[in-house]
Length: 247
Image (cartoon, rainbow, N blue to C red; front, side, top):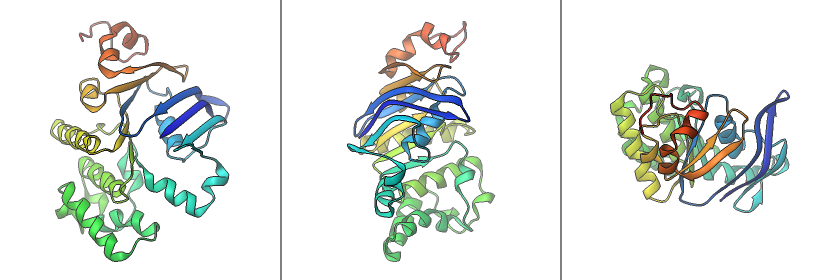
């Protein structure tokens, strides 16, 4: 589904991604791992079409993603409906007066009939067990509740791919466990997952494949998650564990 060939990107001349080659197939569950500032969040933004490569190519379903393509309303709607992005700080993507309108916003932007919008919203409220929040302003919710609403907003478009940036950050252990099990169910149902995470305790449950970055903003390993977690020297090299870590 996703093909990146020699992709590079920089912010104001500072490298964020350097010659990235990555291929992701339908139905995979992938963790992006590496130190802070290595390019994980930038890669997720690029996959979601929020930014575009400075060089190299990004193809989605064998079609190159370009500024010109995304300026085409029909193409852009179709593309963004297939990839859902949950930001690290869920609050930044919540801006409506109540939770119902938050979840309805995406389908409405896609021109979906209001009756179908209502069905989708109610289905998502039920799926994430947040029916009681329906009429609440998002800013009155806790961090974990906001994360659930952000995920519901994405799922209301029924995307093929879910990209999540540090989804476990700031969540209590119970909510982390709930979210992990929920994401595994989505993957088992056929959704492709791309998850940026530092959480080594949960990463093997979240994904079967791991992509490891280092501070040069390049991919230094692409292998089964369980194999990366056993390579302690490699994890030490990228500062994901210290010398006292036990696998």
